[in-house]
Image 1 (cartoon, rainbow, N blue to C red):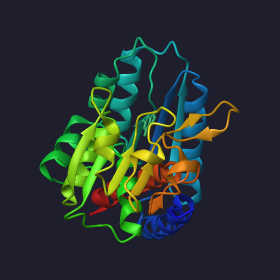
Image 2: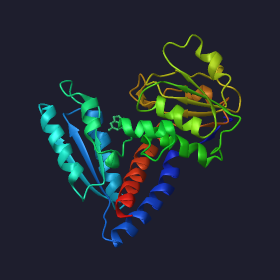
Image 3: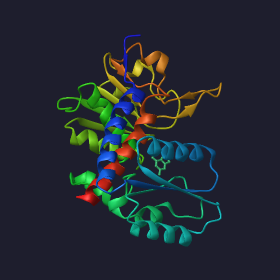
Image 4: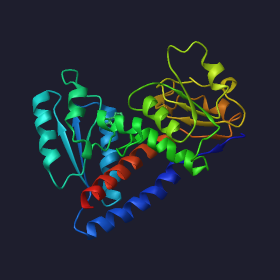
Length: 284
Ligand code: GUN
């Protein structure tokens, strides 16, 4: 193995310790940072994610409320809950776990969250703020990826070529914007890209965020490149794996994030950071 690991668990632990300190300082001033997490339906993966988010809050001294609703909840009922949480002074961040049942329009729901409480960073106003370099909440997964780059001395990416594979609103697009803001030259690849390997072989940094195994293999990586794997998939044995062929790519890359223990814990950590930030803005 030539690549060094970027350990998301270790970095998370460090950042969460800072979050806990900031939470304690705010609480001492009478403002306990609070996150509301809404889960609609019984998607098993979502149940695990929300449980982890609520537990992370408790571990760092944040107040959290988990609201679970039956899949039959109507869109109007959900919008009414969000309206109430928008006005609730004990709640600084609101997260509606996706995906929502098909009869509910994700877009309507996300847009109903007050931008001041949009700790997922999914609101059009948050996405727009990122685009034009204004203050707003950054989407947690790409934000976590940027912190991982920062942890290996790559905060400023001037002169570097970053290739993002995937163009989702949740990861690929905000990732590209954050890399651009860090002065990287950015290429976004996707299912319509003719020759993915020709693009990734030019990259100093590759972020794989497709949701499909083995999207990036060793022959597609420039020796010494930094490889960030956002994927969360299961292999044939049912084991968690990313989008990157880890066994092959680790022999070529300079740095690589493992799955599990890479980007996953960082996503939750950045949610805590955003929630603290929301509470601090409220207390200011
Ligand atoms: N579903 C998958 N990832 C996420 C996330 O980061 N936030 C929310 N709200 N839902 C998700």
